[in-house]
Length: 124
Image 1 (cartoon, rainbow, N blue to C red):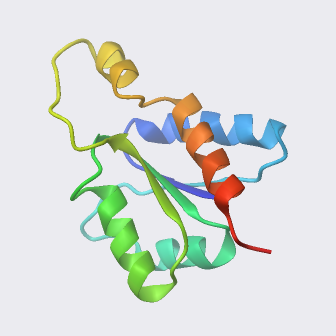
Image 2 (cartoon, one colour; image 1 turned 45 degrees about the vertical axis):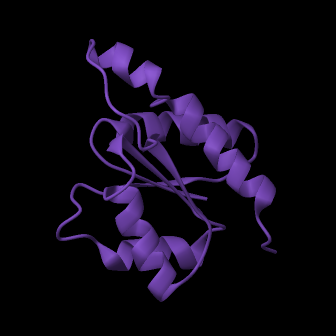
């Protein structure tokens, strides 16, 4: 599985990859520093070389990294894409840690989403 993350989610994605490795699931982590310009080649390589992609972002998945990745994958190399981030909800105020916890922005959620992708994978 490939985990494409941005911002503070990159560190959490690396933690998730370690957790997944302990369960025998190989995960590559790609730091997608920006959406525009987006690294189309890295996304297509991730789609073609792994069972699917999990995106991780600390903001809305609609119109964000997850949406951009899904568009590229849909056009160039279709594969499953699951998105960790704000699921079209209104945000609330709090400390960064409180807000991240409330919306499931965690290494555990990323790993759980990757495991779900692998369970539902129709590959190999």
